[in-house]
Image (cartoon, rainbow, N blue to C red; front, side):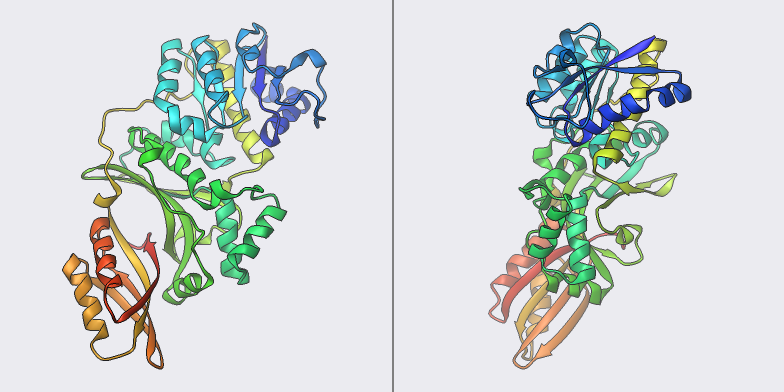
Length: 426
C-alpha cells in the first residue's frame, strides 16, 4: 500500500525532497518496506520552472489542497514562515494527517497549540530538521535522552554566522568581507539579518529548551544578541586569551527556572565547540548521568535538511500503516521560565583606559561594588593609554551589567570597546 505524500514548498529543501522521493522510491521501499508516493506539491508560483517534473494536476498553489485531498495521507511543510504554514499544519493535524515540518519559526512560536492538536488526533508531529538541519538532535532529546536529567544545551545552530566568524578568525577578513563571501557561497541570504542578528538561532534555542527540559519557552523570552558588532580586535583578544568567538544558543536549568539565550561567546580552544568551523553546526549536551555529548554536522542546505525530513516521513508513514505509535511524542510540562538576569555568567571586557597610577584599583572597585570579582587582567600599555582585557568570575548577569554601568562613568575609562560572555570553561 502506497502512502500518499503532500509537500508544501518546493524551494531548496522541498525541491530536493521531491526529487529524492521520486528518484529513490525503490531504494526506500527496499530498505523500509514503505512505498512513498508524491501526490501533491504546493508552490507559490505555478509558472516557475522546477528541477523536477510532475503532472500539472499534482501541482497546486493552495495549501489547503493537502488537507482536502483524500489521496494525501501525510503532509510535509517546508515552505517556512508562520502563515500560511501555521494554518496548514494545524488543519492537517486536526484532520488526522501526520505532519512533518522543518519550520523552526512555526514550531518555536506555536509548539503548545500544535503539539496539543497532534495529541488530540493521535498523529505524529515531527520536526527533526527544524534545529540542526541534517544533524539528528530532536529524536535523541525526545527519545534516547528522555529519561536523562539535562542541565545544559549549548550549540552553534546557525551556519551563516559560524562561517562569518570562522572566516574573520582564520583568514583575518573583515565582517563585511566575510558576509559577502557567505552570500556568494549562498550560505547567507541577500537579507542576512535573521542570521546575523541571532533571530534564527532564537527559534532553535527555544525548541532545544523545550525538548531538553520539557518546558516551553516563548521565543520572546529568549535573550538575543547578534554578531554585527564583533570586530577583528575582539577575535584577536579572544585568541590572545586562549578562546575563539562563536554565536551560541544556550538553554539551561537554573534554580529560578529554565533560561534560553543567544549571544556571541568566547569558547576555550580545547572545548569541542571551538573546533566547529565554517558552515558546520553542532549541539553540545550536558546531562547528570550521560555526561557530555556532541552532535555535529551540516546544519543547512537542501540535501542535509531533506535527509532529516525524509527520516521523519519514514517514521510517520510506518506509524500510519501500523496503527501503533512509532514516532516520538513531544510533551511540555509545567515549569518556570526565568529571566536572563538570574543566570550566572562570565564576561570578558576590552577597555581603553588612561595608563596612570591607581587606574586598576578604581576599575577593580567598580567590579567589587557590583559584587563581581576579576579572574584575570591583561594589559597592553601604549604611552598615556592602555588596553585592558578583563575576565570576570561567575556572577549573576544583572551584577555583570551593574559593573559595566559603574565602569562607563569612570573618568579613567576612555572606552568600553566590547563585552563578550565566556562559556565552556567552568
